[in-house]
Image (cartoon, rainbow, N blue to C red):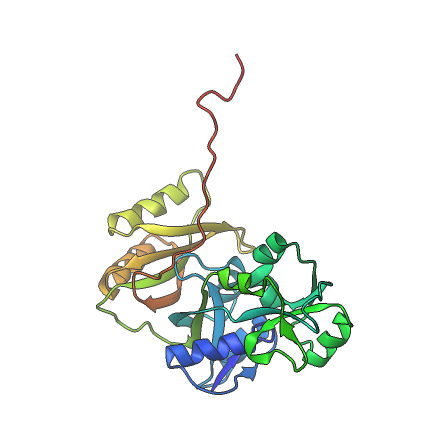
Length: 286
């Protein structure tokens, strides 16, 4: 059985499931992200399609949810799908407020703002009939192309939503032990140094570097259990290397947990990049 959270786009999640060979047809609605993870952990042979951000740069919300969820939860595969979002109205002249759900806003917000479109956010569970009523006669909708309602047409500028980057999804399952791998895989690893003192992170990063691992993603998160926790993503050439790192962590009293083992090492296109503007050589006036 295969499901998804109530906040996720049904058409895109189904496309990801078909692309990844995870399953065909409709997906079970498992509720909120927290409810989805809890359900997966408690029902045998149930998996979920979840939006992951990017294999090399996970979304903070998913990292938090996984680390605070059952320790058996593990992301095991990742695929990218082309966005199917469309901007539609009753007439070609429609230009009112755009009714868009949570998944649509997540994926399209930057393009919509560049287009000057005013979005009205609704829960993903809002029915198409309810969205049409909210849009009124002159309003517009942002919906998946496969569910454009009868009597609506794509508006000039809708093609710009094709500029939205590929959308990455992962397969979330339960695993009691990690599966060995001999080919490179993308690993999501959370860890917490035993003592939160000056230099504790540096020591742990030194252990990681000693294994030859090059971190692609590192984020800190305050922990109610005491010290900070750190969430990482990196390419690992084999399970032997990962096992060696985890063994060293255990010996040093560093708490840890693997959140994802995604086969592959080049997930293109890569995560969003920025062009930094650094400080000038002299930032203080003399």
